[in-house]
Image 1 (cartoon, one colour):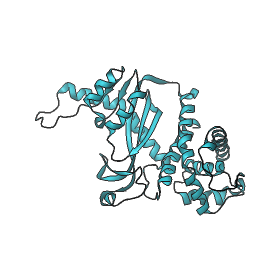
Image 2 (cartoon, rainbow, N blue to C red):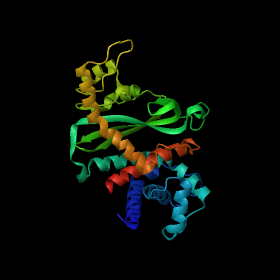
Image 3 (cartoon, rainbow, N blue to C red):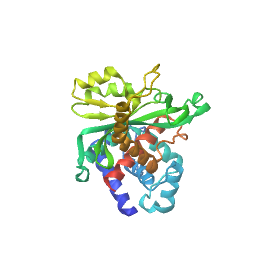
Image 4 (cartoon, rainbow, N blue to C red):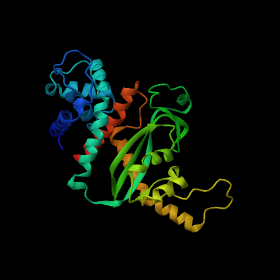
Length: 299
């Protein structure tokens, strides 16, 4: 899609969502009830369009619009005002994401899903790591120090958890995405989703292993598949059947890892070291998720 068509498409989607839902989620910080000349819809469009055009830092996005698209946004404000307006719109990005997920689920181009097989995984959003993780204090309402197998020494930040519907030999179709503090164990997240899952096979990694959870899910006709985890104190290696089962599970769930790699490649969502507030963190995460969903809707 050419850039002009992409910009118009993003603006149209944002305006429709704003008219029906998002306008009730943004808070006006002024007694002036009139619509500002530089509208909320334009602020959101600039951010999403910038990410889609592979400008991943706020200053890069603002400069790109100012240098090449200023005629499309004649009332563009200063950079500091743009950032302040953008952060105040964090609830709008949080509500736009499920709207786009809903549209994605009903898009004709994504009707090749295997409905009874779903994939589950998580990705850390890193605000600080290593020795700096213990000193980080930004967005403490939601961020915390946690661990992840891909990050030595732990990290400070949050996690994105995603459930996707399997598509054969393709990247899964995202169905549900959640944000949790970095110190929340993956099995706890699965427990919180228990009331929303029913009647399918769920493939996840070892972090989601919890025998009581398997029994609880089984009562709802949900079969949880995870690689076999070696029990602490066990001196023998996994049996051949256990290794084969683990390999089979890993092959089925590998596409959800590909989805997170794709998400990182196209939005740089995992790198959040420049975030300076809770609102900024919500914009960073949910804004980039929205950009990724727009890319799936408009490949």
